[in-house]
Length: 293
Image 1 (cartoon, rainbow, N blue to C red):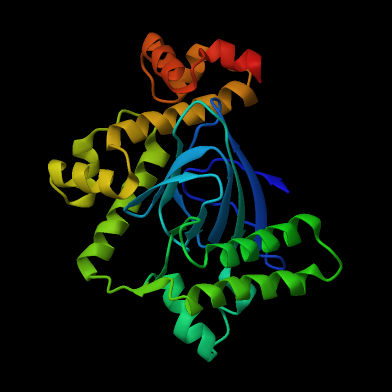
Image 2: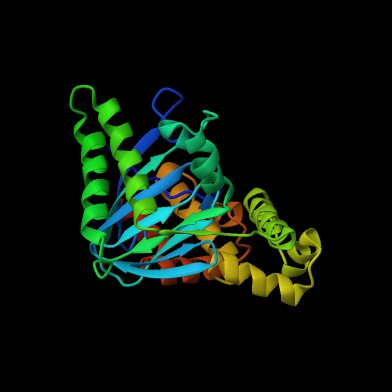
């Protein structure tokens, strides 16, 4: 089982490889790793919350999740995770490419179901809890798929493919889906937000203003701020600070750079401001964080 590395924006990491386009992640979120910033990738995800509470932002929708809840994240969908308290949250996630179940084949299943799911015109229910009448059936199927990847019994590749197909079968059987008409303007708006996220990722070391980002997207500043918060789940400037802090935390534990060098490297021109925001986010100072890892 792989360790989950909190990503940012569009992931360049391949989950699995061409021959095995899937990966299982056992995720433990605590004070020192309390969030996964907004990102997207071409694979889909099935997740079971094992312990604790968190907030998931999936596209424009927000879900407050707890032990036993299920999440279904489509390909190319912006999503993020935020810990709701100082207590640990644990989840298991299967990330897989739809090629696992025949996306690339031009058969009826691919054309009618998998391709619309991939391009966003067919949407599965993103969240499910025990109140759902078919929850147990779908929970058991996802849990079985996770177990299959973790234990890898002989010929498990056949078994995993069958289990992922069965999960989709159950979702369709119980009508856990909606047909979506994506307007041209909505699609353009979403791409503009992704463009802004990529700009932030590439320029986080430099000063970034809402005016810059709004101009990049050809939006007014107010429209940009409102739409960004709706899609990403947090205000734009807060997102920039969170991204810088996450990168700073990575540098603290992976390099020998001084704290002041890291602050400058991550776009903080003022060391005391960096220390204050870091402690507010991680509940420890940068130096304490380095000593604790």
